[in-house]
Length: 91
Image 1 (tube, rainbow, N blue to C red):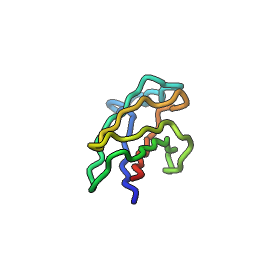
Image 2 (cartoon, rainbow, N blue to C red):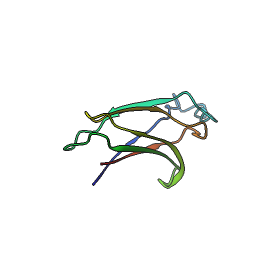
Image 3 (spheres, rainbow, N blue to C red):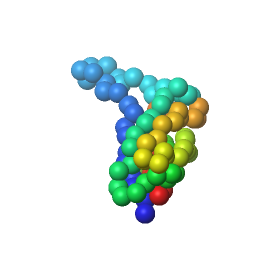
Image 4 (tube, helix red, strand yellow):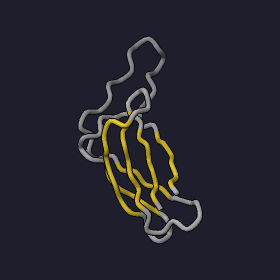
C-alpha cells in the first residue's frame, strides 16, 4: 500500500506586474518533515521526487525511513531545482 501527498515548494509572483521569481538552482538546504498516518506505518520508506509542470517525475531528490511512530525528516538533495515535490510512503 502506498500513500501519496504532494507539496508545492514555490512562491507566489506578487501583484502580476512583474515576472515570478526564478526557481532556486541546486538548493540543498531545504528540509521536509512529516507524519504518515494511515494504519501501522512504523519503519516505512519515504521517497521524494521532483515533478515538472506537467506532473511528470524528473528527479529523485530524497529518501528516508519513518520512525516507529511514522515521523520522517530529511534534506532534499542538491539536484532539487525548485519544482513541486511528490512524497510517497512505502509501508
